Image (cartoon, rainbow, N blue to C red; front, side, top):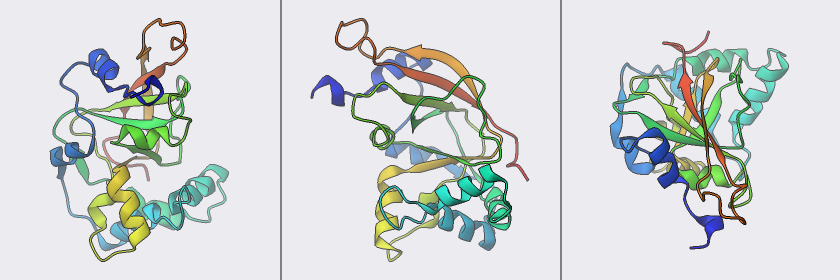
Length: 207
């Protein structure tokens, strides 16, 4: 495997500690802490519907929330109720692109993935920017793959099963825990780095 396709996980695990978990098998550590209403289930399915590659409906929701136009406020309110899962261990999720210090999700929801390769799709392989984010045990998240099943829309089902998206709630805060150079100081690789963060999330999703 070329260094451009090499995983950052070894460096991230060394940085955060060997006990962190990530990847598809991590879903076994997810638990549902309360019932999911029909309206919130529908909102989460709508958020993760994939009409074509890179065009999930959630992008339209977050764009509307960013503009503050009120177009999808009802949808957002229902989606707030979909944060009924948590992990029993600290897990690492991945996000394509860096996260500026002090950034919060504001009024938008934040999509991440348990699968490192999915985050890489948003940048060239081996690119400079990818973020590794610790989601502490017990923090509420929304997990789209939990509301899709065999027989559903084929394109969306493929996306949610492969990406294993983990949605973080509105007003999430990213606390910097430094940067990692997964390939050390090798002259042709030393510019490759990733930001490491820990989430601070409201006990319940924003309203």
